[in-house]
Image: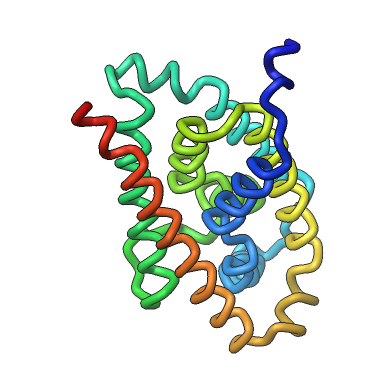
Length: 198
């Protein structure tokens, strides 16, 4: 247990938090969340959605590498594959194209599709595995908790945030975080692709 806390570092927590924040893109998902509320005919249960997302992320952080080993895939290979997914996601945000299709209706909207796959989707899981190749586990865990808190706050204040930012503000945020995500994808690719040929 003591080894778990030895790698604690504020800089790593900040970097990991920013990566997850860009990937989860809960602010950029506000239009989807508003539409989800309308289509489901019920209010989003912020606490339930946040807790389910937390469990999914922590489970993948702990068991993700073991699951990869079952298929004979190492973390660096998964990180490279993940960087390509992040690259595609960044193009969605920057160019306004749609490469991934998500259903946004149903009575269990707080769990599916909000918690999974909008919050804790393939991109988030890929990022968590990729982060394990660079950062200490304790810092990633804290980063996950920080992002879940942000997710909860945003879900509770979705309509207020939408009114304050407006369509233009949300569009700008998506572009900005799209560029950040693109830079992160390039960094993950270049940092891990060399290991595949070592």
